[in-house]
Length: 534
Image (cartoon, rainbow, N blue to C red; front, side, top):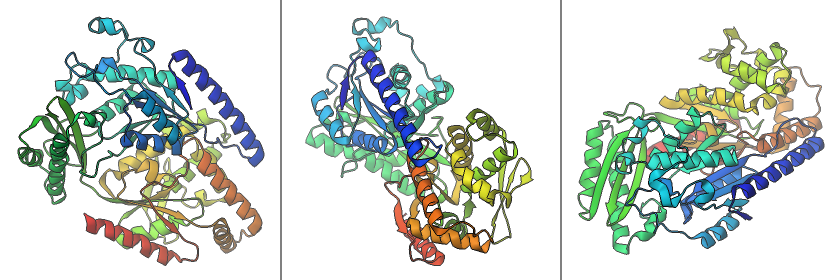
């Protein structure tokens, strides 16, 4: 692991790693005779140091999804007000280095303020270019009490994004307003960066982990648990049917009133993406709180969603995801979201237009202009009717040619961005079963039930051969199918864009020796257990 303290060293390090990754990618492509991109992505975890388990969870997620993981450690003067705790903010670089090395971090970027263009002597007369988020997003919640805070965050995060140019950046849900502001920044400034939000990590008491928790005495720590307890009481009312904002806020206030030492700054219910205050939850809301215990400022939040559960089924090609997903949806009366058919439809259109597979610019343009529609069908073999640009392609997208090319198309960033956005819009109301390669890890990371469906290469090859024989397409051998499936597994698990991974909270189901009905019953059972817990 490298410790880098200057911009020059960081740029040199990243240039060398990108070159090494490129050479490795070329070597792997030669060995496996594939044209797909291997896992060469760079993940950035921005921090202010004093690392704890919440940070480590972000690092672990980044380590799973990227070839290179950079952790920045910078106590940002721009986000502290005149009377805030910049000087006494915990600085534990030696301990942070040990934690990062153990977690598999490739490099730490730990510049001083001058290196980041910040003059500590003239903070009030700041001459550095600043990034100012939309006023509506920073005037409420913490923005009312920390004037200039989010300009400082946005400015330094933008500098880090420009310096590192990561493929993904990782932030915790605990800082819900910051997360929304950064997502908006990335969208408005057209950064080609995926913002990955990770769940809040809590102590056994429910207290959200924070670097500032070390300021608290044992007594104060106990009192601080009231924040999460109040949020949980409101969540209980919400899931019992309460949707009125004032009632939910009052529930939190009643709980916090039991801790006289807590000084509440705000309790608010807002839309999680825009931060617009809500009077009533229609789809989802973020119930957020900030309070002080002595001189320590604490924040917390929970997301409340008014939707039916989503079942996300991930797994390698040929594991039976689509067959099982269709049957689970029918069994539970849920909607089957055939994401695979969407990628097949674009692949079909690419082939129809005569576009070569490596012309990513032309394919990007096609993906963002085409209109894909999915509709229920009475055909048991094809329960979803698929059309693209008003052309029914339900049967055409199942051809061998489309099947052999769809992985290369699905690996392209622009294609995935176009389709994932549409899929997530469909998922806002929930009540659906979706399957794919990254449904539970990327498309619906907040799905209530996550399944990772798998089977041995031999079993998947045997099933595929059986299907081909039914379609009078049995010219391919079992050995060739096994080789093709193994190669597809490698391509899917090492690609740069949303590689195939089992979500940490997914239930793995190995289908070797199981019938479709048996697998379906297992998943239905998991779903019913999840509902009973709520």
